[in-house]
Image (cartoon, rainbow, N blue to C red; front, side, top):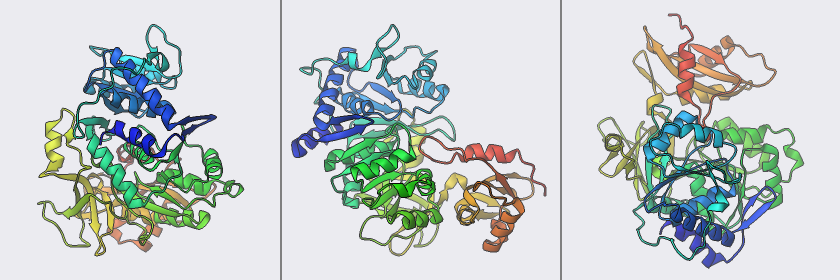
Length: 506
């Protein structure tokens, strides 16, 4: 099945119903198809051909989903891009992908225009909320009659999306995702979670792979989405109450905001049964706080762009093991291997590798990186993990985040869990910095709770009371907030740079 078929099948099975809620507007599934078909015809009239790349870069709004369906119906390839990126990052993606058009909004038009400077061939600029001018076309002005230009050839193994990674360790890599990758992952995620028809919240960026998956699952299940252009805690509570939301997907930073919201008790959240958490590790203390406050489960899961994205998740009917990211979803095979690629015993830490129809065929125009991560159909994730004797997966850390202190491996997450359990700590991230004597030293970056006076010395002693000495941070750095990317992942590259500027005395 191709991405366009998701919407066609949705309409055939569920008939017309309210599909998207955005501010005061409502759009049905049938209207979504009509807009997508007209956009597809318009793109073809503008010279967008089969296989051409079209960037979509704007905050969440209905036009993002109209664009995705319109681009795929025109036979082109979707390039979703986080609107928060710097113009230099946008420039790289536009140049590397060879984008023929960019669909954006007034919120980021200036940055997008800057990013297109210096390109040999500038893509067409389409703006969803401004009138056409001499530099850009209005989104709705592009629409054309749907009698022609809808592409029906191709197959499920064709590239549907090129999703660029965050690029925190260098230039972003374009992850190729086929129609089969995305469809199979959405179908198996819905099956794993026994997803029921209902209304969910679109608080995650639709430009992120999981945002794509959420919308695809809604097509499959006949569900609706309340779209948020930015995460607004009060509006989220209002939407849960208004639409009797049973479940939605979030990242730990959002879950923390919901727990901390002082007016939470003013809203009826009794419909809420669960929240799916991914993208970054969820502190165990936060999981318990959410469940206690709202009487709803937190189903932590794990995925990555190269796996389209879901690999494991908790679900209804199985034990929730705090600290675990659950069990593999249907259709996904995984194992833990050592440095030689040999499978390790249950409970041992090694690199998590994944296989299935959801796994990317590789990176766009990057054979070297493709051959590094794909070996004999297995995706080497770069994540260190262990599996218990019941098949539950525990992500220990990113392979690149491992700290080797005095010859001993230290996994930052072990230390972070201890620090976030402290009653005066909101969140913590531990990084390694070069050290002449130990090879690497540990620095913990900590956000304190407001109006608390905990000191560096107190937290170091606290860690020593709970951890072996070689796992205790040498320094504690207090920050107002931890740097994050658009989907809530902590930018440890930034923290390492900041921490390395701190003098660590032997």
